[in-house]
Length: 290
Image 1 (cartoon, rainbow, N blue to C red):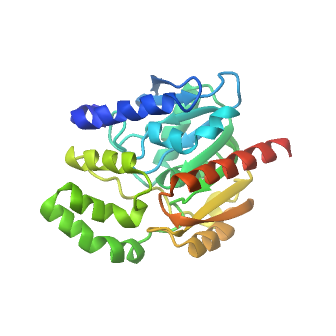
Image 2: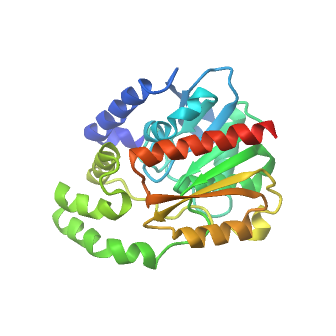
């Protein structure tokens, strides 16, 4: 069963977001794709004969939200964004384990089912670690990559714990909207109310958090991954200190060609989301001409 079937509120919020995104991008569609590991819900946007681009969403930031975040990519690419299993979307099944390239194997099966040999890819937060997992197993399937506030380089512990421990306890004791707002404030402030409401519906539905992404990755894991990589970090990221992310990326990623720092939280404001998608699109178009 897909996660949206567990809660009427969650299902309605998913469909409302999909309707909104349909007004922002051309040719938005959604369908179940049969893969060797079961059905996968895949949303697509953009001109059908444009080059494909794989978009990997963050933790419980399902396809309609991720496509809104990167809506401008649909102007030049045929954007393909699957709901990752275990992430409160419409793909049924449990999340893959974070080790042994399980996410990479899952995505290989999806790409094969979509008849995509290789393409550029964008990974947001948790999705950044998934993208890197695919790069470790099948480096030639990613022609260029943009990692936006990505997981996968290290496991953050003390940085989020210091800001989330007490708000999390307060929310668990009260489980109301006010205390959930306080829990989400270090993550996104007031930057995306619709996404925060979706997260609240996820908690209310009792869907467990898939907290461990793939990684951390070492230099030897990615030595065969030669595609150009863009890294975008945030100054006030709750999880990933930007200086540490950049240092790890420069050590691990063979062809890190651009680093951009945004003055914002892990989930940025509308203004900065627009700036980020402009930077990603510019990077993709530039690298495709090189």
